[in-house]
Length: 187
Image 1 (tube, rainbow, N blue to C red):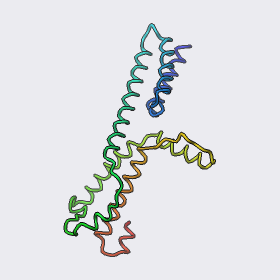
Image 2 (tube, rainbow, N blue to C red):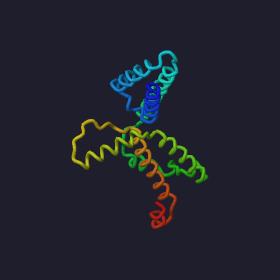
Image 3 (cartoon, rainbow, N blue to C red):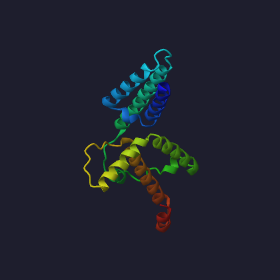
Image 4 (cartoon, rainbow, N blue to C red):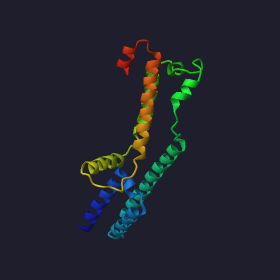
């Protein structure tokens, strides 16, 4: 009966660490996970399979946390300070400004490439990012004060990228289009 309970706890922990690895980002949570894992391994000392499963689970958790922190570091490294890009474009002569279709002449290929980039960006949004936003919105609706709201960097990065992409597409439509009415309909 104890082994059945241990198997269920292991399955729960495994699903939890795979689905919400950010929950174990701080040392306190990781310490509690290790304590639970240690207690469970004591139930199966002679067999050792539980110890192997838990070892694999914690290794996968560390790898997931490491890859997410590396992604965040790379994203921060390439984050550019916000400047007024409109004045930069206005100062360049028209002959040096290129429209995007001169770089990639097939709109279908361009759309496919942008879709690939979009999918890569979306893949870095995790359930805990969405849960953080939902819980923050709920606390605002109930007029509660929450001081522990953390930034959802992946969601913020995606939002910034999406806004830049939208501006690029709108700019290209306005640049290429002839009639203002058609431009506004396309946008």
